[in-house]
Image (cartoon, one colour):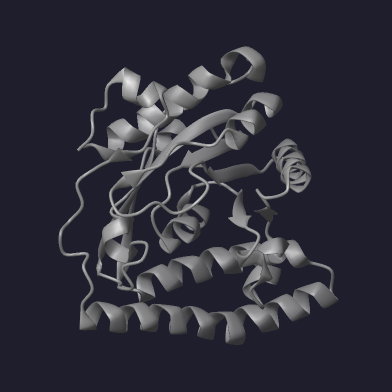
Length: 263
């Protein structure tokens, strides 16, 4: 495991943590993987699509939200994965937050959405929002696409995030910008911290643990087991500015997540 010194965190470089050595490919794991994808497809076609069609016709698209929470939890359970959440005492009722999380698996996005403990929107890659049914449904429930290859469009997305937070939603952002390989914590990008500082919303660092073993990037397998979502103490941003305070806020957030991942 790499050094978790203040210098290593401050430099915002990749850190690596131990991973269960059984996340290598296996026939049973591959069967579980394709079952998981097939189960997701079934739910999208036969539950989400009819619901979206009806709700769009009656102009009640946001009513899809509770169905999506149920569907997310059902898909995770159907994939043989349990979710353990801790730290909900760090959330104040009625307060909007920016949840900043690490990202190692497809499961992370779905689990954070379903188990954050508050109504939440999320940033997703633009490619995901182009997926039939899934992409359309995600737009119904405050999922936004970010195009990092186009600075102007990325800025427009961040402006929409701010509007969403100002309207009373919390927002989840995976600060690494992509899924990390099993065991890795990649450098954090600055977008989430700009949003938090500009809105004055407190940051909730989120350590997502064990999903690199359960459904890790490029492993092509699903292993049964329990993932952990740890909601860490809030980091306040009110009264701070991006010009002077962003590097320290980023360091505090990343250090909090890294220390939890190291446990």
